[in-house]
Amino acid sequence: MNSAIDKVAKWAQSQQWTVEDDANGYTRFYDPRGNYIVRFPASPSNEYRRMQDLLVALKRAGLPWPPPSKKEQRAQRRKEASDDN
Image (cartoon, rainbow, N blue to C red; front, top):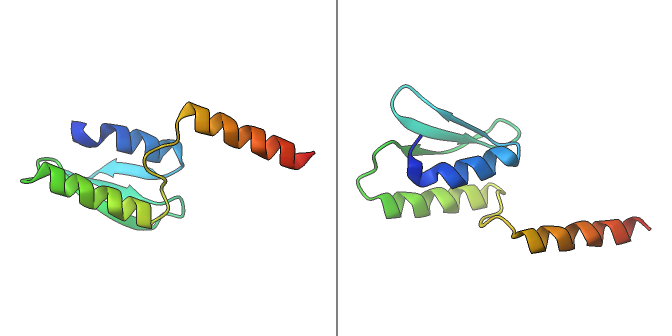
């Protein structure tokens, strides 16, 4: 896996997405239902552009990026807890 997308890949996996490397050197992203979304090459010619393309494709498929901060996560948990009451 390319070190440039390490954070994105870890976040995607924590959200039940599948991230795997194929034999051709690409990192492939699959949504939680198993649908193929996008791939990222091991050594892109224009890394910035490929990273932007990757993030746009993942956002369109439903992966929130950037990941919410701990403060935002805590606020969301509190909101859900108060809705349950």
